[in-house]
Length: 544
Image 1 (cartoon, rainbow, N blue to C red):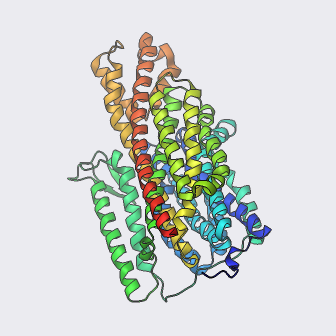
Image 2: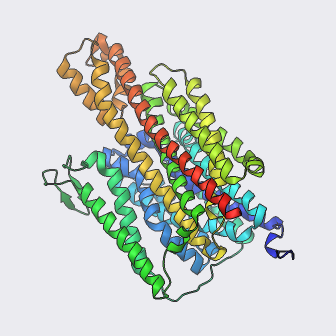
Image 3: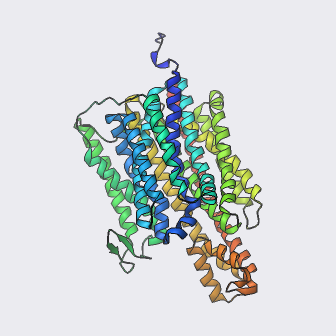
């Protein structure tokens, strides 16, 4: 064995740690923006008169474009310079935030969210690959722990920040707050973040690969998100894109067509990338990365964690505000329990990793996540005290912080530094696809469960069956906001003296449906736990 001093193990400088802080804040901005909109969405809908489809795209377009662009921007970061792309991404992201804040209609806001996503797609892979290049050995593990804790913590604190800004200022401030923060990060990054690049080994630019990956991932996430509204097979409503209309009277929905486009594009992408490798031309994705078992199993685990996390973030605010009757700030405070747990465990993760190893810490974290979400599902009713929801969410947050903090470093532990841009972009893409799947699966489970639970709950309330059927459908289509309206109207609602019993019945049905959505999230987290067992085994094999 070579026992000579390894220069790669040299302790990082003070500037490197300051650079990590700057990169983490930049990352926090874009992760926060993925979840901050959810709680503020009712206010945005009311102010800009959005319809349901508009509202869905305001909330989900961010994930769609991130998933479509991250592989391309990760490759660009390696070639063009990671710091340079980070700075460009900040400028684009802040510009998109300003456009979103001043948007006066649905089209302007959706377009602004697209600009934000392009900026975020430049920032995210540049941060992780820069951290991978700046730190070595045990210091890299600590840096990855910070990076992972920022992702989990910022995602969890988004609903609280959105609730506070919306209730105490206006929804415009969920975007305006990015302007001063983005400017500070930009200036700090100029001085504190070093420029790094990947080693260019092969000639050429993989434009075709970039287009195929964008089409494939974009179509896949589009299909999953739009399935419940457009219909998984038979059309349920019209789809209008750039003035072209896919009619609800068509023989087939646009969703299975989008799935087919995604499958064809992604298969062609894999074939094309393999071809580029054979002819010795630069490829967008080095498929050889998946020969590292830690990379393969780690990405699968990360996907399951993202599905579970975003399913919870999507469905719980609807339950807290509509069924429990909390205000926006109250719901944000309950959801902040996840952030509390994530920050606490994120700080402690490296100490646990020193004892159990990073893969073992991921396993512990996922076990806590499964236990926490399952506990929430079991105690959740229409009259559950808020604290009884918050306590298991802290447990879930503890697990999220442990898993996220150590998972990032484990996924990239065997990837060469010169490929860190591709590796980090692949992991980020997997996370974004997982987040979109989480929202879609939770939304579908909630919709299906509401169709069963609401009519059953309304029996015995004293209203005619036909009226009960219409009310159940209206409540399901409005994602529960009908309950809020009836609660505000009181005896002056169309149901008069029966209003209180109707509200109680709808709240009970909504709570039952939320439980089923959370159980779906638990299933995906359990799959992540199983995958992390394989990840731990793969890491152990590589160490021997």
